[in-house]
Picture (tube, rainbow, N blue to C red):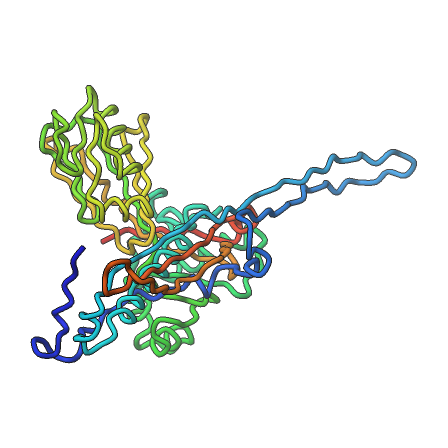
Amino acid sequence: MSNSLTASFEEIWAREQQEVFYKTNVWVKIADMSFNPTMRSGDTLNITYRSSTNVQTYVRGTDITIDDITDTNEQLVVNKQYATGFYIDDFDAIQNKYDAALSYGKDNGIYLSNQVDADILGEVFNATSTVDDGSIGGTAGNGITLATTNVLKVFGAAKKSLRFQNVPLDSAYGVITPEFEDILVQYGIGRDTTMGDGVFTNGYIGKANGFELYVSNNTAGSAVLAMATNPTANDTVVIEGVTFTFVSSIGTTAGNVLIGGSADATRVNLTALINTPTTTSATQVALSTANARKFAANVTAVDSPSGDTMTVKYKGVGTLTVSETFTDGTDTWTANKVKQHCLFGIKGNPVCVMQRTPSVVLKDEPKKLGKNSLNGVLYGVKTFADNAKQMVNVELKVV
């Protein structure tokens, strides 16, 4: 095991470390964390919902119809556990001007917090209501091409969706992307309106059309790959910089996907690698360690044989970037279906149970003059039935 910390030794480099810019976490502001005190141990939270009874007209002297009632149980399982670790040699620590263990430990804590953010904002896919281009007069199923001319319609559609679910709108929130914020700022400049002034002066957090807004780079993304024609050898699909290469012989290169006997078979192979990125088999070669970790935590793919498509959902990505090099030009990512997903809803939705927050532990390394810096987080996230009604998936086209 070796490390390179000499970049910060005083005699070689400047005293100050380069500033690292991190994503802004919003999960602590929107999720329901109220179950934390009752879930200090155990791994399952049970929530019981009652069935509805029907109001009926009463006729004097006649029997009332007796409705059956049932309880429905839903569970949140605390099963998301992530960790980071690195080694600091005592001599490196002595010769560094800054506290390497503290600084790198803080970095890792933020990385873990970003993962929590990604999981909570990724619950957008479980929202009961969706606002897409069809919701504001365009084509249903397509992402919205956001502009100053339609941004208010998006808020209106989200609010209407919540009202249709009989949801009280006090404490409504919207987690938006930086691109969304930019459109709001452009809309607000020069307009004598409360919304315009609020967005322009309050920066990342303001209120617009009744929604308290938070800007995040950790929103979810999705994309639809149309692939009706079987690829040829060395055709590629790229998802967030990770290349998947179609091959006629599996080989050993990370990301290789075996070409099957049909486009359907090959899509199944590609879907399998995305969903099991650490596995090497007769039809796939595992991704690199770093990419496999990222995909295992955040990416899922679903094949649709009837539509000759594969849908990829990516938590915490912000703006999802995809590309392809196919011999057949009809195989491509569908432009109107590469989307950002902004989570709108009522505060307290979804639910998160946090049993361990990111915190650093230093442990001596046997037979070495140094320490391992370990960090970990343990939590569970769930969109219960009632939560889903109080959440809206606002789909924007990536442009």
